[in-house]
Structures are given as C-alpha cells and as structure tokens.
Amino acid sequence: MDWIEIVVGFGCNCRCRVCPAASQSHVPGMSAKEIAHWLEEGRERGAKHVWFGGGEPTLHPDLIRSIERARELGYHRIRIQTNGIRCAYLPFTRRCLDAGANEFSLSIKGADAASHDQATQNPGSFDRLIQGTQNLVATDARVEGDILITSHSMTRLADAVLRFAGLGVGRFTFWLTSLFGTQAKGLEPLVPRMADLMPFLESAFQTADRNGAAATTLHTPPCVLKPEYRRRYVHAGTWKLSVITPGSEPFSAEESPIEGGAYLKTCSGCGMRSNCLGPRKDYLDLFGPEEFSPLSS
Ligand code: SF4
Image 1 (tube, rainbow, N blue to C red):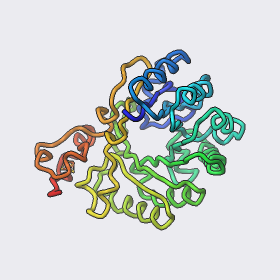
Image 2 (image 1 turned 90 degrees about the vertical axis):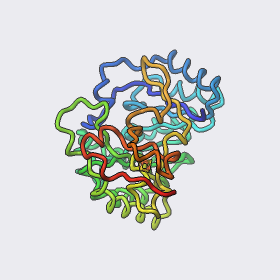
Image 3 (image 1 turned 135 degrees about the horizontal axis):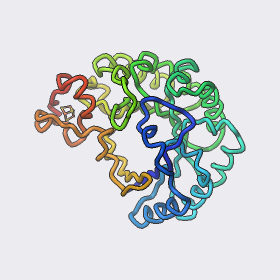
Image 4 (image 1 turned 45 degrees about the vertical axis):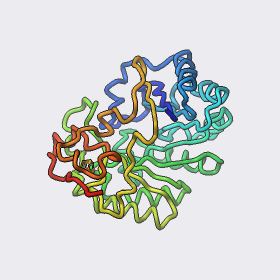
C-alpha cells in the first residue's frame, strides 16, 4: 500500500446529482480521533501518502489538525480532493498549506460557470473554484484537475482543460460518471456512451498536450481508446490505494464497482487484461457489452 484515502465525511456544500456521497449525507463523519487512528494505522500498514476525501473534506472541522497529524506521522504527499470552494478563501488555503497539505485535486464539473454550477446545484461554485485554483497555483502545491464526464460536460472537455491549464493546472484526470451508489432517479441520460464520448475525450487529450499538461482517463478501458491514447488509461490498482470511509473497514480502490470490475468472458483473452479493470456493471446495464473487445496486446 502506498496511499490511504480517508473519507472524512459525506457532507458537501454542493449537491451534484451524480455524486454517490450525496446518498450517504446522513452518515456521521469521522471524529478527529477516528481520523487520527486511521492515519496511524495507515503508516503502520506502510502507506507513504494520504488523500483526504469526501463528500467535501474542507468542511470537516478537524481537517487542519488532521493534516498536521499526517505531517507529524511522516506522510510525504498530503492531498486534499476538493470542489475548491473553500480554497477561494486565501486564509483557509494558507492554513491547509501551513499544516502540511502539498497536493490538491480540484473537481471540475463544467467548462464555465453555467455548466459547472448546473452540475453542482450551487450558484457561484465555479467562480469560487476559479479563485481557489488561482490561490493554489500561486503556491508550491501540486494542483490537479479531476474533470467529471457526463453527457452534458463531454462536448466541452477540451474547453475545461484549456480554461484550467490557462490558470496553471498541469495535470488532468477524466472521471466518467457512474450510477453506482446514487439514489436520485432518472440519472441514466447523464452517462454517455463511450463511443459518443471518444471524439471529445481525444480532443481534450490533444488540448492538454498543446498546453503542456498531462491528461489521463479512468473508467474508459483501453479497448475503447484508439491505440495512441491507450497509455492514458489509468488502472486504479496502480495507485496502491486503500480507502477508508466512515463506519466501514478499509478496501482497495480497485475493488470499488466505480472503478470497473465487470469483466466480460472475452476479457480473459485480452492482452491488456492485467492492465485493465474492465467496464463497470452499471455501464454494461445501460449500454451492453458491444463496445468492448479483446486486444492483442
Ligand atoms: S477487452 Fe476487457 S480486459 Fe481488454 S481492454 Fe477491453 S475491457 Fe479491458
């Protein structure tokens, strides 16, 4: 294990319909004592890096103290995965950095205020994300963008990359929206068919390249990508990440149905099988298996 992700709570100041954490917002967040316990346990199990997630971790009242504890315990990379809203407030950002946070991954749900705020159902969230991004890129912290792909956002992935690369974000990861764990009804149209997504994803990769940014993709197996883009697929198992959520035992990131795992019979003959987590079950339930076919290598 290299990383632990501590999901400190499921509460959030956005209300994204496709967020699985929203259906667990009634579950109490971790106490400071629990977070400290898992930080210590993580180090004992060999974790070198910690990732604070949620929900929205910046809302947790003990986040700063937990970051300090992570630093005291010797964690090297201390990451906060955030919607960026609280990072718009410079004193808060400074407190995170002073405590020891050195990486931020920012959740980007649209290329502009109209599309992002529609996804988050929080008017003004995009403007705060932009301010938060500007505050962070002005520091020594590593700043990345996690771009959510939905049927609404997919046509403007390249615009999102351009906007945030222009602010100084140097690395992007594309996350395909999933229905796993969501309770809201009628979300199926938000999941795009991969065949429809590919031209837009390829354009976004090219935009990242032109702007000197790295770009990778989760949840789109290698066989749906053109050969020249297959190296951009990220198998979540390569993170060596153990995830801890409130009230449950740790599990490996690659065990989550959100990462895939619904291999087809034909996958056993695929040359990429060991580097691929397979499609997600909820995707296959929507669109069937036709898009996935074994690769020779
Ligand atoms: S055929 Fe299966 S194992 Fe091979 S790349 Fe596609 S989904 Fe992955």
